[in-house]
Length: 257
Image 1 (cartoon, helix red, strand yellow):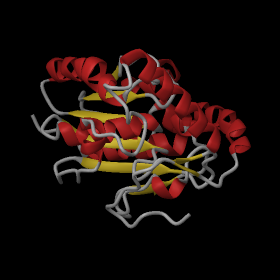
Image 2 (tube, rainbow, N blue to C red):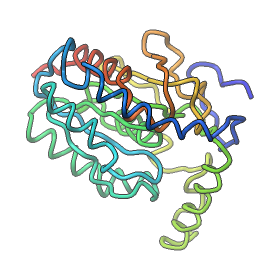
Image 3 (cartoon, rainbow, N blue to C red):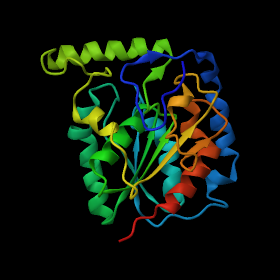
Image 4 (cartoon, helix red, strand yellow):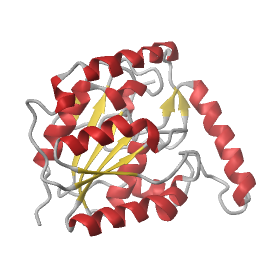
């Protein structure tokens, strides 16, 4: 399947022709991270104390982003977890009922624009929030996030359908009948389709060895904003090369008081 042209989005979820077993190699990313000078803040630009809000991926919680959270604190930023709990709920509700509360706290604590960093589905959510609140966001960084079309391994599609059925059972099919589909009509998907303003620095980090999502859908289409690293989909949350890019891009987007 060919990727969509830059600036366009695929509406429907689709199966990607990829091999998921390679994701078992994510442990190597974690080991290499702890062996890298980047993890200890060596040779990278220090932060300015601005807030960075982290958003976990599908079926993940804030807990697995602890490494990234601690590292951001060491290099001079104020990291915040998303507070969304398990990422297995209507994204619109996660944003409105949980994530926005932590964003408000970060804005209040620092008094300046925030940065958003999201992994996988978390990056899709982060981009949607950035489009909804461009005046509050200095930058958005996605890690292996197929925000240009949900083209993923069939295992993930099956899991997403299970989550969708759970959402419909909890909230009622009359309320969210198209949740977790490309036909969703809520603010989450509508915002995702908007072009981010130039005031929000966007960064997409991806790997061609992605065993979960089709990497071609994880890019903005602008070579200045797209960065390829070696690693796995899961492992981008623990990837030293990704961390170095994150530090550089955050420094480029330091908010002005």
